[in-house]
Image (tube, rainbow, N blue to C red; front, side, top):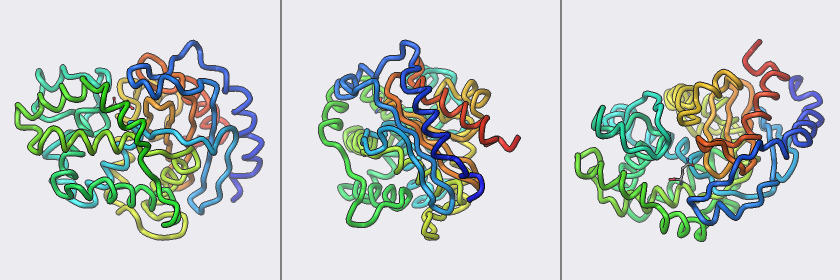
Length: 312
Ligand code: GLN
């Protein structure tokens, strides 16, 4: 692919430049297992819509997807229930508050603003959990693995240690879920909804996997091997919400600096999609105060400019 000319050299250069450019960012301390991650880790991967993939840095390192899983759970729910049913439970507007804020739920609307903040992702999880019961996480893992182009014998899985660490320090998420249950925004049980939500946040992947998911979205929902994994209608919704809500209350600044549909997580990963062209993922654990990877945003900004990923 012509635009992948010299890509290895470009990714190597970004790795060298940005690995330590973390500007005093901190790993997510509210989840003990994440606080202990090596802050010096860095990896970046790019995968074309045709499945050519290149990486630099620690691209074998697996990390929990955290909020990046919200892209997968939304896509799964849209495919299974259709947009009408999903958007009865969750809105499609950006949120200017932190990702785990409870405030807007009380003062503005009954349903969460969008599926990429915690409250919205918990309602999406509750839809899936209510429908699939104990089979829910396996079905989501199967779907995520297809999007990531993983072979059936090498499927994505949940890191149980991280799941437990997260579940034991999740007062905020319990508060959000109970609040939504009290207003009727969440109709399924709080416990089962959160069980699935924590499991999905703890799905492990590396930047290669995430760049393949980005490439599947960039390819209109066809995986690199040409299999339809996501419908085009769902892809349009993902692109719209990733562009406007993907980096929480940092989405506006990211749109200016990078200008691509993306989703971040407190793991320090970012999944990015360049429609029609490629998927990109970067991982560097230190976060800014909004929960986005400091070096990750910088590296993506540089790559976006260098490869004219905005089209200009
Ligand atoms: N598991 C995290 C939480 O629920 C996900 C948040 C995130 O990545 N921003 O708090």
